[in-house]
Image (cartoon, rainbow, N blue to C red; front, top):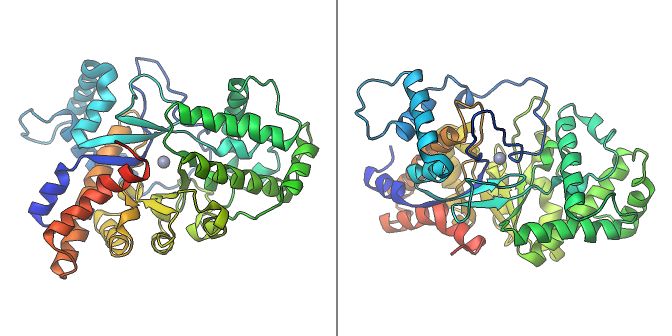
Length: 416
Ligand SMILES: [Zn+2]
């Protein structure tokens, strides 16, 4: 059990959530296409226990979020909870997302979205756009053939890149790679940064493996020029081009001081390539002396390869959050991961919820509640164990909790 006094103090800390997918408050019948860029996967997969809709934790989440302040007699019915949620949405209107953060003691939530929009405003919600589309400017027919789940991502990437072209005032892709990099890639990233982006996110592990070669500009430029007007590049040629573009973006990210968020570890789709999402695959990038100014944030901490992530925290340019481990693992198992990280390089470990919408009933607020709850309790368990073993004092335990929940992110992103 976590030390009750320590846990109570941990629950008071105003957190910074390094990774989440909040939605705008929607009116009846309205949709929010700017949440994600990809199409839904059409292949079925088996849902882990804590993400199943019948998980009783969601009942607790809704009770705590929407019914607190009312007498807690017996367990509320699904109807009572649904109407309490509807009432909260209507009463709070545009303030609903920020009100949810208040209920969770989350000060700032990073919103990984195509675009922001009403109801999701700074300083409570800070933007993390997707960079994936930059890597797929050519015909994606063969690239998508490698894995049935890649298709949904490529369709979205194509749409997103078209939107970037329009925003850049271009009617088609530039003829040469140099023009593409400056007029589309660099121009879009600069625009995103000046619109308030705090990081650039890549979900590449849903579209390819995370091993990056180090091709020359000449090689990449030849492939781009040959296929930009049509024709399907071979998977090997396309990968060469992608590897070059990604290294270019990583370099840019260092220059602009815009950290890179990279999805590492488990992915939620039936054909997801787990092996190809291992954090160690990123080592050639992390070890490139030219990329030491780039801050790489391993989103989800590479779970189930959390011990790979732990060892990568040695590197001065590597950080990690434990988002999604907060619902994929039990609180007990998460506490074991956290303790191993905290005993290593605790200054690089960050809280994250990965709050996302499963259904309108189990939406981002419910997942945020579950993640937030588990994260704080797991942190309490880990620190209680370290105190019991004489590794840290109570004051140091609280200091570590503040670092993980808030201060490490505040420093990395230079937040006020
Ligand atoms: Zn996510």
